[in-house]
Length: 353
Image 1 (cartoon, one colour):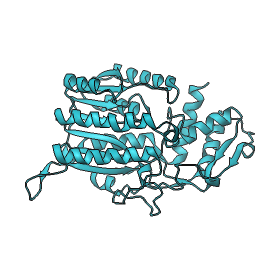
Image 2 (tube, helix red, strand yellow):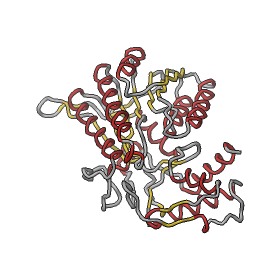
Image 3 (cartoon, one colour):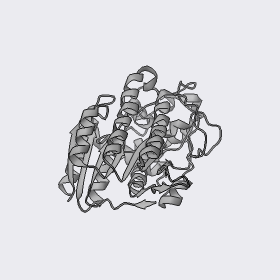
Image 4 (cartoon, helix red, strand yellow):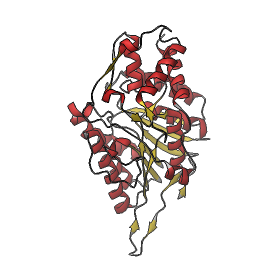
């Protein structure tokens, strides 16, 4: 592994001020002793843009206290001209691609935006990395690539050729494209398969957040597959810690016996490694919402729950084998759902009060 000192480097984070992107940028602003961090996001309205503006405000506040220069650029990775101009202007040392059209269910009715962002956008970044040598390209993949895999926990050694959603297919495609570019152009790249990321100021389309909003509005929440779901929930701080560590260690450039480059390419899972039963997760969320004063103590939860069947594109279990991440980077997610949902409930009470 090639060690990378991030201090005084120029780093591109796409998808900031998205949920993971904003938190990662704030971490870099805190840790780095100097350098430049460029945030790129198109601030689309897939969910309430006010939340992205709020996160951008947090990032800008953090930048005021940091020796690191922060630049925010509103634009899309799907815009090749813009991407090329940015690489020429800033000569990025490290690139972290978190920009993507997210969501399994949204991809069923809106395929175009997934191709535009997740395929064309990622290709634009790979091309830019090819013509402007970078020390490390880190990019977001997803646990959804495992589809309906019956073998658990999910290992990066597993075959993942049967995606059950377009979103999953685009993420698997990104891994294949990255591998080809690593092989052909010797670009060190690391893909990270994220497992159900949650936390304060998260994505409102994620279950814990949308369920909270429905309960606050007195609506009924639907619990899919009659609650027979297990999810490897990963708290945002654990995700950021994992990405931050991975940024600092790139796959090594080496030649094989034929004298040609062995692709400096790696893929890791980042997940809690402890799948939680969905009903337990919901009960914990409800307890924490009451504790934070978001919902009254006598709230009739049973009256606001509806058990329904499975929905298209979804899978019953996600479960990460994160051993490789621990072996190579000394990191395993540690924050449990009680602590994580408490942080979310307290943030929610403050943000919406």
